[in-house]
Picture 1 (cartoon, rainbow, N blue to C red):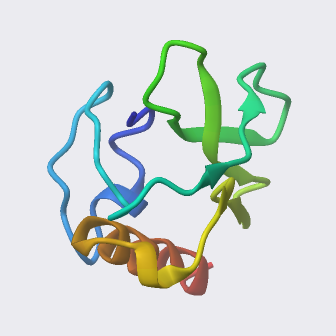
Picture 2 (cartoon, one colour):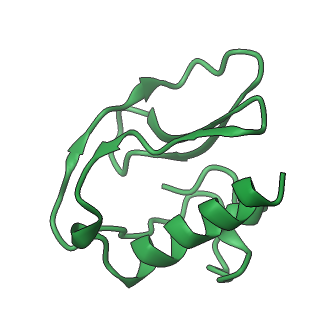
Picture 3 (cartoon, rainbow, N blue to C red):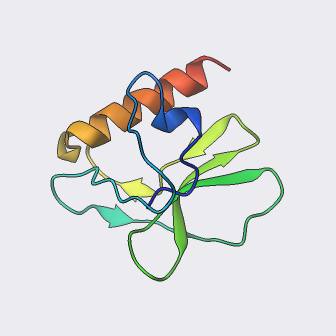
Length: 96
């Protein structure tokens, strides 16, 4: 679930046109998730959470330069949205 819709990873180079609370499917099959409790420590931004009610973060940005997706997956399982978001993340990190 999108938690930071205005963050560049949701806008460039592919614009997802999402708002907070939107769900974006990233995988063709469900990968194992490694989620982090949503208590947001200093220097960590929560960009997306699991699409469940337990509010655990799966895409985190730490100190504005380290990103964790929190998924154990083979990139072959990414669907079109997942591939585009991964490219957006790489573009964002490369621009730092």
